[in-house]
Amino acid sequence: MFDEELELPNARAQRRYESLVGLDDVKYALIQNAAVLLDPDSLRTWSQKQHGAVLPVVAAFSQRTPLFIFAGDVGTGKSTLAESFAQPISKQRNIEISVLRLSLRARGTGAVGEMTRLLGEAFDEVVSRGRKMPPGHALILVIDEADAIAQSRELGQMHHEDRAGVNALIRGIDTVAAEGLPILVVMCTNRLSSLDPAVRRRAASEFQFERPNDVQRVALFKGALEGAGIADHDIERIAQLAGDDGRGYGHTYSDIVNRVLPAAVLASYPDSALDASAVTAALQGHPPTPQFTDK
Ligand SMILES: Nc1ncnc2c1ncn2[C@@H]1O[C@H](COP(=O)(O)OP(=O)(O)O)[C@@H](O)[C@H]1O
Ligand SMILES: [Mg+2]
Image (cartoon, rainbow, N blue to C red; front, side, top):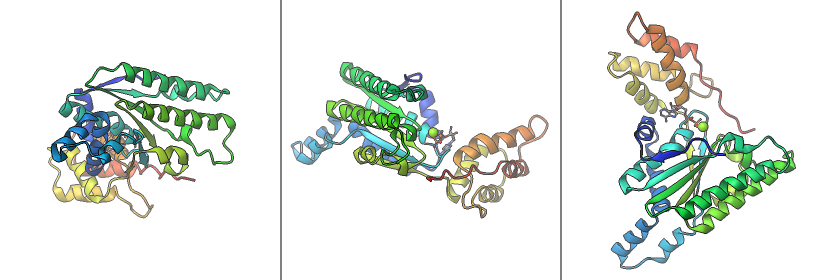
């Protein structure tokens, strides 16, 4: 039902978290929002210290549904960040955090009642683990590619089984919320507008992910090509080439990191050095992934 569990803190999560470029604002807001959910005492402690009491507004925080939605284009870091953002929280606050990822298998094969049963079991497992957790521990449930489950119940063509899946998901999220345990659910989607409104309404926060802009592409290429001896003006030209050249969209982070740069390396290896023309040629050979359209 779950993919291999991730235990934070760990060095790989730290590397993955740090490898994400251009997400500083998202990272900052995310960590602030998540920290008070995963470490609920910290907000009460702050309130006591600053105001000599736990303010009603602080108590209201415990009413928030511990659900975050990560939305945006493909290849912009949603899955990577979902699995690694708790790393700094876990390190700084000395909390052991288990990241459970709902397996794609849990979506079921479409047999009647299957998705409902699997989702119900997954949330039961999360809540029962949460209840047994000693202090200093927290849980994150990542539901990646959530569109398939949480598609709007309003879509006319959705058949009965999918609707039952949405209901099971909402029930699960509400159960987690009612328990008041340090459990956080993160849902990732490429199509925010197709998420069921009842799911969206529950989310404590939504985070938007976008393709890199000019400055972010320069930072990405600079970071990856550091030490290769490529001049700054060449990096800037390369970053520009990877931008929107009239198609209406540029390369995604993933296009650059996982396609263009490896192709440039392999074109140079083993007989020549990596240079600006190898990267330029790789860019031309690997056009950007078309934008994910909502319709
Ligand atoms: N903001 C980013 N900075 C650097 N690399 C990124 C970024 N976003 C994505 N990548 C690269 O693309 C790969 C796929 O990203 P992923 O998190 O799966 O994107 P998404 O879930 O949004 O489709 C990552 O492993 C990483 O190598
Ligand atoms: Mg993803």
